[in-house]
Image 1 (tube, rainbow, N blue to C red):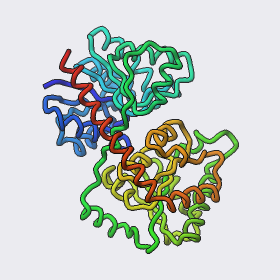
Image 2: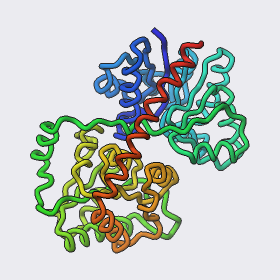
Image 3: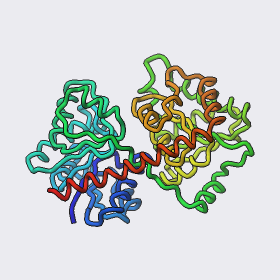
Image 4: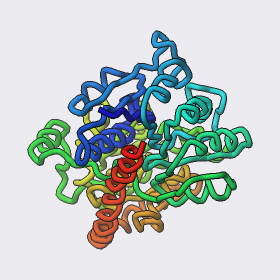
Length: 391
């Protein structure tokens, strides 16, 4: 058996991160049965219970494992006792560079020096990079790239970032996010959830919303506070309910977002027309299946947009950071976004109403593009296999 270490945000708390890991393992299983995947994680039990049908080895990163999250013995062992390292998701950025509880780049750059000495290749796997705003981040990223025989990104923006920073780099291939290949569960399972949560009862359909707990970090200082943001989301929901007579479904894909979601709901007048589902109770496949049944969805979390694309539900990005806008551009939906700091109830409701009116055409357009993007994501396995077999 060969060994590959997979680095990402694999704590089990984020449905998007779970989808990246789950689909990566599923995609490799279509081509290989000779690989054991080492997965550094804060929650070994979650990884084992949800992905244990694959050949995996969860590696704990808790203090009793001699680790401060990604800084410590488990990460060192994972990166140096393997034949290859795959870096997934968007974990290489220089925000809070010296804080190992937030930043992965510093630790990965440090341990990459040992990988280089041992001839262990590091490959960016359907990932994003950035932001890189400081010289220390640029230098750290260069250390990682010096170990890379190949960079596979999920967006053109990452390629542009590397080139604009004038970093030495290998071939850069632009593919797609692993989560695009998420398969919804059976219709019978979806109907169980729909019945349990009392969803999709209204005759005029349901629209979807998603919010994010990082609102205070992303909005420009003084321009949009948490309460104001919640009132804008609630106001948009009220407009949609009043004018279209639709229901509203909030989808939570990160456990920490449930609190701000409930804060938004409390400002909505017709709370009887609102439902909330989240990854505290449902898998990423189940949430994707439910998003396949809404007319249109607007969200902050990028992976709610990706889940919508997987099932060709028209989506609107509430733009707070570059990767959401980059994803929408990739799937031909770049015009369907609204900037966080320019948002009002009327503007958000307005763009959602327009997308809902044109949802059939938008869905058809998504289908042709997304099928190609799904193939790109899976094709990354072959590129990695070629390098693995040449070692």
